Image (cartoon, rainbow, N blue to C red):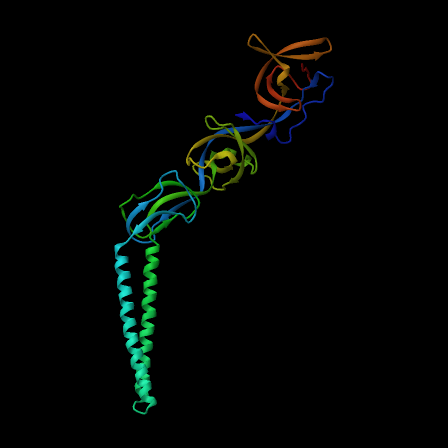
Length: 325
């Protein structure tokens, strides 16, 4: 168990009001107990960057740990058949364009003959219909060409979200199918996921302050308990903690946190009131007969109205007047 610092204590009872300039009356204070557990760094979204077409992976522009932005190209897939299909579509359009020009000529000739009385309306209608058929066929061929061009453009594999590349599933030269993942991207922010024994499920509180031990070489910080999941897993209650200074590189890293799980009453004295002599802790009391040094058994750090304090496990009782230097 660990005790929260003064900023994390809620509803602390007043220990005492000074009787004299250097004396305080000892009274119980409410202490928040914490459970030390390891939280696992998780990401909100883990999405796969997938190939939209099948083909050969001609380039991969990212590797594990790279930061990417949504829509950024991270790989390129090429399918040689698409180039052949595009050439075929263009050749078909050219052929239909030539036939359309011939149909236009026949149509104009039929109208000219009809105007001079040497042709029939039936011939005009036939040539006009043939001309419109070719025009529609050209429109259909151009639509087919647009589809092929779009398929070629979809060979670019783009990042589906802003984040960091966790893993790369394919390498340059690989043959992949439509929908096959190329890379996995972590995005949406990072948080700590905790698993605590289910006996603490009823005492966990959303928005509670959670002290977080810093990484090696980094300062300690604090987070906020933002979510408690209602479903227990293997006798554990799952909770999420938001930490601003968590970082965004390592996913799966284990970080030590201290979760508030209970409160209790304790006696505490200001740290400056404890004297250490020959390995023993002493506290000076003001008694009717004068000053008296008492041996105490000190516990962990807690907060007092006078500042940082130490819990007293034995040696003192409520109502004692402690002399503070």
